[in-house]
Length: 152
Image (cartoon, rainbow, N blue to C red):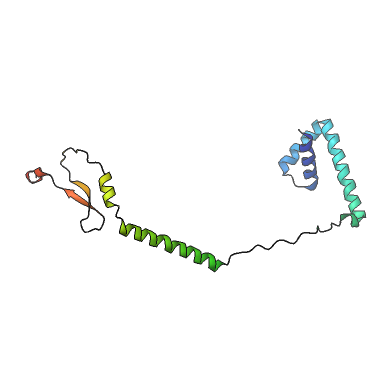
């Protein structure tokens, strides 16, 4: 065990801050290790002398409050101003997206980017995406096969 760990454990044990299991392990270690027990006795003696000195001379235990520097005032933004900024940002981005979508339809870009791969015939119904001629965006359109009427 490192001396620093031993010092900390002995002080914590003296203060009653160790769990019972750890206290038992520390006592067993000190009983089996002569140099560690001597070191622990020195620490306990120092703690005892310090405790008696503070009790006899209470003026030694008074602590002077450190002189603190005045804190610089932080300028805080009022809550209503933050809310107004969030609302304004939301309104600007919403309006910008609305007008950008209204003036430039992305449907033609999407339709031109879709691959036109040859598909195999199947007995199941087929659908495809098509541009709405009324300018409403995209539609899902059923593709009827020419042989559809012949099948039950």
